[in-house]
Image 1 (cartoon, rainbow, N blue to C red):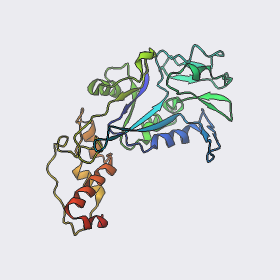
Image 2: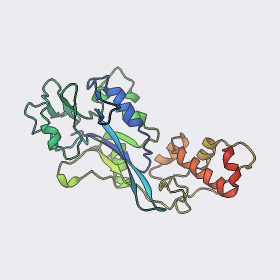
Image 3: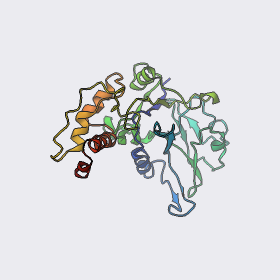
Image 4: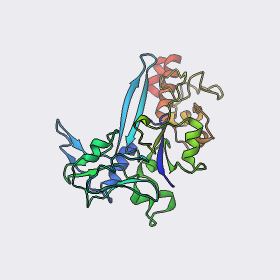
Length: 288
């Protein structure tokens, strides 16, 4: 049986919220929309989102680390939200394993949200219907789109390729290989829901910039030493960061492809470059 799912690489997610905004943009005008935002600027805002990114600080200074954790419906293989639905609005699609909602049948009773241990269901206050991530079912089934675009909007929008989409039941798929190579794990497996979405764990490195995953530390970098440019010349930080970039963990060549394509966390590298120049000549940092 096919089971489509997301695999999210926490080691390269930079918390840019591109997945959040692209998800909102696509779904608010598609089969799932419109997704309302009630009181968006009040003290008690309310909005309907299929995908959210939660940010945490781990550890203690100076060894603290920032972790960005995207979370949406996990499209469980044994979804507890489906059997509790009194109208049959929540269902699991047989051909690809996606958990979806038939809005014509939904009465907004919230039974599914109470049953979901991950808080992945949201009530659209304007429509009074329960909503959730569909993995962009209306994109992946759309023959009018080029094949390269038949992926969830969040996957296409991610600038660091932190999100992978595919069939986790196919051992030759990219998602299955990533899970095996990196020790991908399910969220809260003790609930017995068998979540389809997986996370690739953070790799703590010895980086001196504090990001934990940029590969700039002596313990993580395997590249050649930096050829520092003349401090008096203007510096193209983006080009310098790409030349400097070394993946923290070369898994199946994927990070090499990302680096060559320029899909890097340039902000982390740029911050590291600034810190190097600040130590070398503090007055030069104003030129960067």
